[in-house]
Length: 338
Image (cartoon, rainbow, N blue to C red):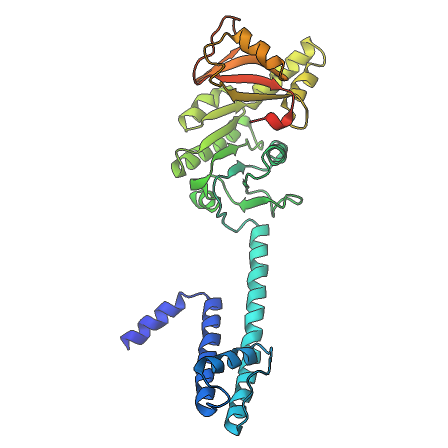
C-alpha cells in the first residue's frame, strides 16, 4: 500500500504530456510483445511487434507487418480503437500546450530563460526609443521589458520578451531572469507627482540590487533631491531627466537651434555619434592634442576624457592620456560605435 501511495504521489508530479507519451509507449510495448507471441513467424522479434504497434497507433499503416491470425487481427482492432483516442488526445494536448505558451508569452506570463540580456523597466516613449536604438546598434542583444500597465506585449516588437507585473516584486524580477542580466534601465513612471515617481523608482532599484548586486543599473530620476537616495539604493548611474531637458531648453533660448545639435549627437540613426572608446596602448602617455589630431584624420573628434568617475571635457592640450582612460569621441560612422 505504501509503495502504491508513493507511486501515485510521484506520478502526480509528472506533466500530463509526459504521462500520455509513457502510456503510448507502454501500450506499444505490451501489444508488440503479445502479437510477437501470437504470430512469431510474422513478427520474428519483440521490436518488430512494437514497430507495428506504433505504426498502427499513429494511423500511418506502412503495411510491412500485418497480423494474419484471428487473435492477431482482434488485437489489431483493439489497438486501432485505443490508438485513435490516444493519438487524438496527444495531438490536441500538443496543440493546447503550443497555444497556451503563445498566450503566456503574449500576456507577459512566461519566464525569460536567456542570459546577458538588458532589462528595461516601464513602457513609455523613452523606453520605446531605447529599445528601438539598442536593436539597431546591437541587434543580437536580448531585451526584456517589465511593465504592469500593458495588457499584452507591445505590437511590432517580435524579438522583445515581455514580463507583466510590478518591477519591485521579487517574483517578477526572477521571471525576467534578473540574476543573469547584464544591465537594467529603470525609467520613471510619470504618474502623480515627481516625488512619488522617484520613490517608486528607488524601491525598484533596491529590489533589483537585492536580486543581483552586480548588474549595472541605470536609473531615471525626476528630482535632484532624490539623486543621493538613488545612489544609496545601489544605482550605478542616475539620469536626471528634468535637468537634462531644462539644460537643452536654456541652451536653445540662448543659442537658437542648439537643440538640433544635441539631438543629432544623441540620435543613433545619424552619422555623427558620441561614444566612449578605451585608450589604446599607442595613445597612452601622449598629449591630448596629439591624440586629437591623430583621430581627426580617421573621422573621430576627441572632445574629452573619462578618468575613473571624472569627466574631463575639453581638457588642456598638454593633458596626458593615462592607462584606463576612456576617450569621449564624436565619431563619423555608426558602425564604429562600441
